[in-house]
Amino acid sequence: MANESDSSERRIHPRGPIELKVEYKRVNTFFADFTRNISKGGTFIKTSKPLAIGTEFLFLLYVPAWDKPLELKGSVQWVVHAEQAQGTDEAPGMGIEFIYDSSDHKKDVHGKVEQLMIESLGYHLYSRLTQHTQAQEADYKKRGPEPTAQPEESKE
Image (cartoon, rainbow, N blue to C red; front, side, top):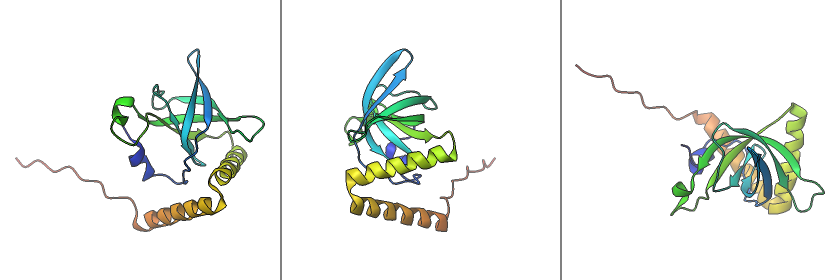
């Protein structure tokens, strides 16, 4: 089971610590939880009852300054269960990757998330966050993925 710190190594988009109300449906029950952070590629929803990894679902993201919520589709990529979060600074919940209907939809969501992050963090902090992430991505592309350990051959 992946945890948030493992996922941060693979992120392309910077995340901002933004708490917003999010509503979604699970079976026949509606849930209202809050985000812990958001990026152009996804969000982390704090919840004690995460959906299963791989679950695709629609959710509404409520931004106080906006007239209507942002409707998004996402896929659960990883979860942190309550017992895993105990004694750590992590919150229980689920990491969500946004799913886009088209390249225009992706541009629209990216623009809205960028606007949200600038409004919440301020332009200066947002630009520092994105520069830091771009530098990390360039460094990763330069050095390549970490080599994976090869299993030792058995000696008989």
